Length: 324
Image (tube, rainbow, N blue to C red; front, side, top):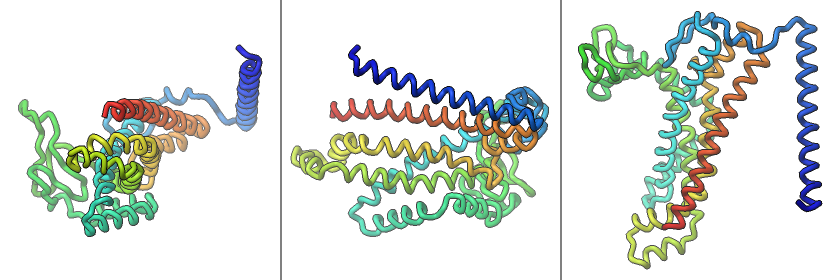
């Protein structure tokens, strides 16, 4: 190892050691101050009963269950809305981005209007607007809208078929009753409002990412594909798209990360996500530092996993573009 690299490594070690020492001192000072004021610290509260109910949870949960299980239920609720929203926003945003490049003036104008409207209105206001639409403008459950066979929409949410019906049936089908819709599964108004708000808002940014990525490919590439006898669809799929993906994937990943973190706004409409349940835990236990640290750690892990997946896709895209 050369002297220059050795000095560089030594400086990095010293810097890391200095930052670690500073962090250790900050933690020590904080712990001492909390002890002087009689404020309890530590993560022992995670093993204690939560003492509160969760209105909506995929995981079975009772108020007697531990706090860590309540936080796990909140994490599952966060992923339950974030993952479908990522898929919907990506598909919808891609379609709108392609629409912005359409030679059809009306379609291009509509797509541009969508983008300029949705991305310039704060997401919180959009979530509140969707919640108002679902809870105030939709009919009551006794007069639910029949969107499709065994698919009903009302103030109570969206009733849809689900697995495991009675009598060994494969599906439990919702049926309109005199007072309410019975059977099937129900997506609550809070979930629907959050899913729609996140998906439509993020789709406007995805659309611009797709449009910019495609326009970043030199026009000569398209002309060369046509000169080789390819159709426009073949040229787009085999020539333009592989090159455009190199520019699209990194900012698209940023939008997916933003969507996941923006799901924390669920607290505004009463959806019990991770942040909402951690806030309830904080109020009951007084462990503000611990609850905030847990939330930050969870979102950091999710972000790092998403970034790693993006890096893998970029490498795969590079190999695809080379083969194309």
